[in-house]
Amino acid sequence: MEHKVVRNIPRPNPDVVKTLGEQGVATVHEAQGRIGLLAPYMRPIFNSAKVAGPAVTVSCQAGDNLMIHAAVEVCKPGDVLVVTCKSPSTDGMFGELIATSLMARGVKGLIIDAGVRDVADLTTMNFPVWSKAVHAHGTVKATPGSVNVPVVCAGETIYPGDVIIGDVDGVCVVRRQDAEAVAKSGEARLEKEASSRAKLKAGELSLDFNKLRAKCVELGVVWVDEDK
Image (cartoon, rainbow, N blue to C red; front, side, top):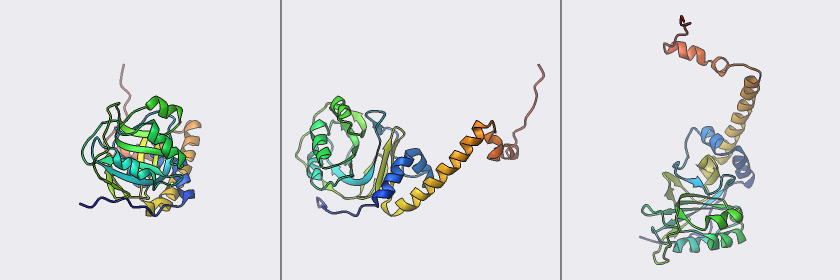
């Protein structure tokens, strides 16, 4: 098997990435047909964490962070590092020192299907991380892997340059080639939600303006007044 570091990848339009980030994980997930969510065990290390950017992908051996170090060199400002392992791992493969290096290159955050350490430092640095685990168990630097190749991270296939969106609701991936269309769908969804919010504040029932009462009747639901 060939192990490689791909230096140059296509990246999406930064304005589209910004829009998707502002929309957030829940809206983007719905806007692209309820696909793209990473597994729910991927949690932010602090609740205010938010990120949106093109993926630089890393494939590592479990318990070995050699390729994370190799990936730093090819990262560009605005990128999000996405790390996965060839077998399940909760080892602390990432900490404050690598984060310092990534921040110096303008990297916005990390998605890692493994463990992280130095959480207090990362929080103080305001470096957003979503991980499977927090674990101080150390790692080695001995096994080759690859950078900027397709990977499977927390159940989702991610290609280099795909858009990664992360917030307190989790992590969602949008294919680079679909990003503009998804952003437009997201804007339409937010406009619809604003209209619904105004109706709800005015006392209207979603059961009625979403025509769900008729759906209930169709499904055999009946409204009755029980005698006391």
